[in-house]
Length: 122
DNA sequence: AGGCTGACATCGC
DNA sequence: CGCGATGCCAGCC
Image (cartoon, rainbow, N blue to C red; front, side):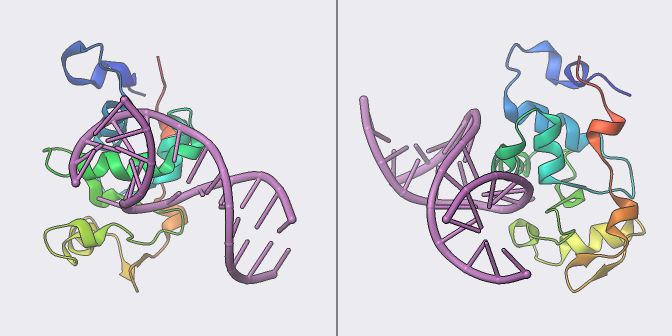
C-alpha cells in the first residue's frame, strides 16, 4: 500500500484532482487495469469520473502514466482514440498479457485493479 | 469574465 | 427495464 500523497511530484501543495489521478494511474500494476469510476471513487468523488478522463487527457503527454490501463467500467477501451494510433492501446495491453476482444478486455473482472482496495489515502 | 466541453458513472422517471 | 438528465473540476474559447 502506497500512500498517495507521497507519490505526488515533490511535495507540491498542489494536491489537485489531476495529481491524484496521475499518482493512482502510475501505480497500476503491470498486467492490471482499472476503471475511471474506481479512480474517481477512490479519490472521494465518485461522480467525477469524467474528470479522470480529462486528467488522463492531460496525463497523456506525461511519462510513466499508463493511460492504456484505464478503461471504462465495462472494460471497454473507450479512450483508445486518444492515443497516437487507435490500436496502440490494445497493443500495449496485449503486451502485458491482457486479451482484447472487440475493444473489450477479456476477464476484465479478474484483471480489474481496485485502487481503493490496494491503496491508502493519507 | 462567463460558459461550454471533456477518454464516465449514476440516479431518476 | 431503457433512456434522459445531472454531477464533478479544470482547461480553453
